[in-house]
Image (cartoon, rainbow, N blue to C red):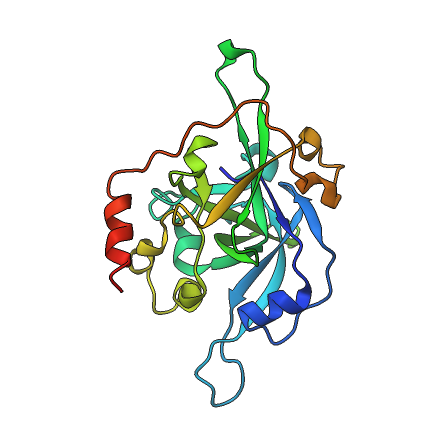
Length: 257
């Protein structure tokens, strides 16, 4: 699951990474929560006449996807995440997977390690960020919901997948990260059908993220300062990393190139 994340990069950094022609100014955000506006990147037509490069645009959407066929959002659950394993076939996400795939820029995300109830221990929040810093792009989906009076609301969700060995010590799910070389393929909904981009829906390499224990301040949406990401002493030590079957072999194979 991904229920909170952060985007503290500058507009210039976001514009450069995603090849945007323009991007309005926005503040650093340290505690982005469901129902709030989130920045997404969508693919347009062409960057300029005669160019083969797709135009990419930035939009703000409400975090919490509402399918177009929903009559009243009040009677529909808030879909902040979509399971990558079932999104292609699930009614709530099927159309968006085919026609409206997006990228969600982020500096990292928060997750909570919840000990067994019988232990009596409180949950521990973690700030999970790329080890090398910078911006990551979560795989996302977008839908525009239209009300009976004709008003429209753009909405979005973040795709999640089974966690890698590092994140699994904290939670069993994590957001799907799309690498820069795959941005165009993921965003291309005209020639790339869902089954043709399914290989991108995988957990990040185990050494991609680092997890930093942080205070309970992140639990409250009203807390939005950089102090949310300051390291604290964890209440309970995490279990050692256990490699999933095949991960060691995958790394050995990658080292040959």
